[in-house]
Image (cartoon, rainbow, N blue to C red):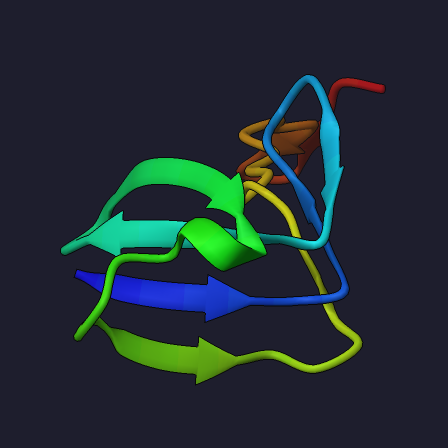
Length: 69
């Protein structure tokens, strides 16, 4: 696993201060208090950044010369 530290972590519903995000591959395994990080895990410090879920906008407003606004 990898442990990601940041100034603030947003888990989709709640914000977390003084926490770490634990990832296993491409999956978020847990958001834990900073002192509860698993020993021996690879640590990535993102400094003053805010970690948030990836937001993807799949909106299409037209195509092939037609605009549907």
